[in-house]
Each structure stands twice: as C-alpha cells, then as structure tokens.
Image (tube, rainbow, N blue to C red; front, side, top):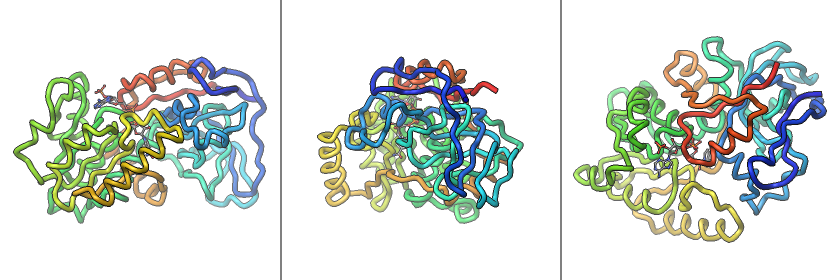
Length: 346
Ligand SMILES: NC(=O)c1ccc[n+]([C@@H]2O[C@H](COP(=O)([O-])OP(=O)(O)OC[C@H]3O[C@@H](n4cnc5c(N)ncnc54)[C@H](OP(=O)(O)O)[C@@H]3O)[C@@H](O)[C@H]2O)c1
C-alpha cells in the first residue's frame, strides 16, 4: 500500500484526496518502480484536474493519480532493465499526463523506454531534480530544440538576444538560466517587480516589470534585433508586442499559444487556437512556433549543466504530499515563483 493524492472526478483542488491505495506493480520488463521522494507540480496538472482538456478528458480513468515529474530511488525493476539498479537515485518526467498512475504518490511506475528517466547527480537534491522535468525540458525545447539558439562553444563568439516572457515562473526561471549560461545570450526578462532581483540573479541582463511598463514601448528602439522570444504566458498582447522587436528570421516560441494562460482547452477553444496558430504560421511575418512535445534526447547533456549548477532549480514553494490541494490552489493562481515541490512521506 502507499499514500497518494487521488482524483475521483474533475473539478476543484479539493477533489484531490490524500488516501491509501495499492502500490503499482511491474507489468512490463522495461518498467521500474520509483520510490518517489519529491514530485514537481506543473500547470498542466490543474488543467487536467479541472477537466479543461476536454478533447482528451476521456483518456483519464478514475480514480486517477496525477503528476509527471519525479525524483526518487529505484525500488524494483523489470527483467530487461539494464541501465538502472535497485537503489539508484533517479529523476525525470513520465510521458503520459493522462495515465492516472502519476507521481503524486509514494511509488510510481516508470517505463525506461518511453518515459524520461536518468540517474540523479549527487550534487543536486531530490527536490531540485523533481522540479526540472516538464518546466526545464520546456525551456530547453523552446530555446534550443525548436528555438534554434546556439549552445556552448558555438554560442561563444556571438551574442544572441533573447526575451523571456513570464521569467519568474517554472519554465521562465530555467529559460533565463539556459539562455544566459548555455546559449550565452543577452537576456531581457519580463516579470513583476517583486521577482526582478531573483530573475537578475539567475542571469537576466535586464528586467522589465510588466506591471509598471509596456515592454513594447521600452524596447521600441531595439526594433528587429531579437533572435528569439520565449513566451511562457500566452495571449495576443504579448505576441503583438514581440513581433516588431524580432529579427526577420527570428523565432516567436510559445509554451502556451494565443489563449493567455492556456486555461481553456475545450474543443471549441482548440479549433479557434488551431486557426490562429495556422494563420500565424502561414501568414505571420516571423516564425511562430508552439511547443507541443518534449523530448528527453538532450537529458544526458542537460544533467551535466545541473551537476555543475549552471542551471539550478528555483524552489519557490514546498508542500507535503498530503497538502497537494494547497499546491494546486497556488499553481492556478499564476503567482508561483520558480517551482512547486511536493515532498512524499518516507
Ligand atoms: N507546451 C508545453 O509543452 C508546455 C510545457 C510546460 C508549460 N506549459 C505552459 O506554460 C505556461 C507556464 O508554465 P510555468 O510552469 O512556467 O507556469 P507558472 O510557474 O505557474 O508561472 C507562474 C509565473 O507566471 C508569471 N505571470 C503571471 N501572469 C503574468 C503576466 N501577465 N505577465 C508576465 N508574467 C506573468 C508570474 O510572474 P509574476 O508573479 O512575476 O508576475 C509567475 O512567476 C503554463 O500555461 C503551462 O501550462 C506548456
């Protein structure tokens, strides 16, 4: 048996119930069971909890355990798992957010072939490792995999110019650090004034407080000079303000899309968003890219940055697993700083 946060129906955060349930068992030779020490919380999980992702709501079978990001210890493994041993410290992100067998639990099932799992360097804590998953990979995907920014040696002699919108959140805090320390970019960050110091410490060269200033106005003189805008908030306003400052071949990469905060993912919204996205891709005057899939191909390389602490997890908020309701309330308030971590009982 194990403790987990279980969801029995779509709805409010209070629908997450801390209960004792049967622990998962190995059902395929490539699976491992991870004893979860810490789990990361991401906005996709409250969007699913609310039942907002209506096109695919049917995929979630109740009772369900949500959660994708984990860090912990291998507790059991299938016969064909050769890369990991029982007792190894590992972290990563599961592939399917609708599996119902998520990481908000003391034990979780990870498929070593399909899910992202890698050994955790001893230089980082389980909480830091648990934060990386979705948010870190989204930042990496947006900047490097589809954003086309140069990395390390290749970036040494050029200074790419990057704007990160929503720089103080989960994705944004990783993005500022990757852009600065891996892409060697000049980083302009958009966040509220109260998070400006944090974002500067992470590597931003300049911070614009969106509650006080219109960044479109502030950056007007830097017309067509940015290589990339990474948008972690979504909506039309930020898109419209970004286009004039992007180079002709620059990329506008969004983690969210034309609907601010991406809260509405009903079928009708998806159709509208699809039309706008297509319009911007075909008729837009700059490259428009939406992050739709995350790959862990680069995870071994990323781990070296985490190990050297070139990229660190900003743990803004920690809760015990039993207080997952509070974690979801905070996440859907849009006021998260860095990452929310759930600590599992021993
Ligand atoms: N496409 C994908 O595969 C993918 C993957 C991951 C995430 N996402 C989506 O990307 C979004 C960001 O994820 P996240 O984990 O970074 O979320 P998060 O941690 O909840 O973001 C919170 C941050 O948003 C900032 N914020 C709120 N309103 C803002 C505004 N109007 N302008 C600028 N900043 C604002 C807040 O900063 P201040 O308090 O400083 O204002 C806060 O630091 C979510 O909608 C998520 O679902 C998509």
